[in-house]
Length: 526
Image 1 (cartoon, rainbow, N blue to C red):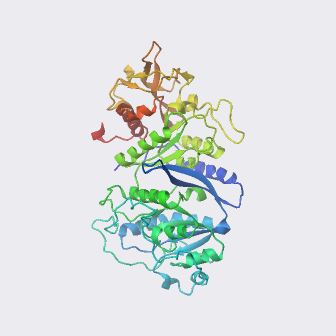
Image 2: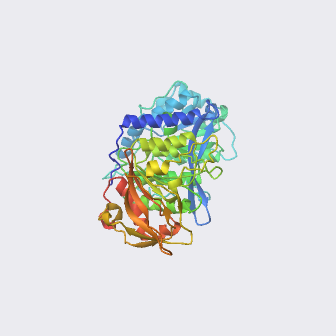
Image 3: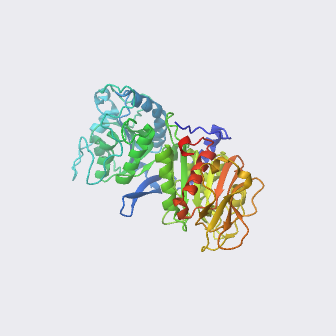
């Protein structure tokens, strides 16, 4: 198993402080200080081939019209692995619920089949007192997979999902909700349609759903996602506050945490968007200790080279071939200077940037600067040399960074040779057996017309040079390494859509990811 533990320079405390500062900045920018302001992630269908595109959007909810449902966070599960993960997640969930409660959100605890434990408590009686509501579609005891709306689940949980070996004996050992999660005086407790009745009684239209298990109760219970969406509630899954019942020895044979991610993606495609606790409590998104996958955030935000198509395909390669956790970010279709979800960088181990001439919102630019200040690595492609140079056309409420190329990447972009040219790529003699070039067949031809990037900063080390094939021109560096403060940097001016069909370029990009993470790539791929 690959480790995501990389030797970052700044202390965890400082990195958390930087993250909290960015979240505070974003909150301060909310249109109404009394509103809950957060980013949601969804997956939008693209074309007719079943493909989906990740989209982020900033959202505001009125706390008085919002509930948070805690699904089946029992004191004990029949699966020991599930019990362990619930216990690990519960402390962070309690912090999130405390924050939401303090801001006026109704907290509904729903530990199914344990209502006898709470009988006679004010929280239980509060839910019982909610008057039933006639609905066009009844709130069912269980709402299973809807083949008219959703594809089959992406994981096989037919064995019950226990990932212990040998598997645990199934049963129902739970007696109450785990004690780590506080049940306050003003909260409610139920495991039935009472949850929806209580929401209607209070005029609640928005629902956060969290808890376990993502592929089972979080979808099917009467207070959970399928039913809330069916009843017309604005529903959001808190994706870092959930866990799937999935055994990696079953299809699609991925790590347990990756199985949860696949179910989250299913929900984002067919039911509702998701968010993370990071937007509310000033810490990076929660990850289980056993989830050691490297996390790579990919930012595809340019309008010339189809990065919105090519970079997600590379992200899938990282996920499927190398068991990476990946996050895709894109510019808003309504505002090219808005890249929602940039705070994802604070939970990432590496970032890949393919952007062109943006001036970001202050909190988004601060997320990038904070990420680099934490000593984290960056891989930048092609137009990223002028990613944040708007040539003086920066909107009043946005922030540019025209010095990004020289300061961070170590280049001096000044233009390019004609788009009717191709580039011959060769290694510099000093490159030797550099890990970035492992398995790369050189020389090769690139469809990327040559960028004028010289001179490089003294801190930069060129590895590949390019020449215009069609005419006599001085060669230019097309791939180099640099260090910005403590952040390892790899930049390449390659990245034309046809380059992503070139095995040599894809190998370079794959090598760059392992290089900046200081990890040995799988031997069979070298």
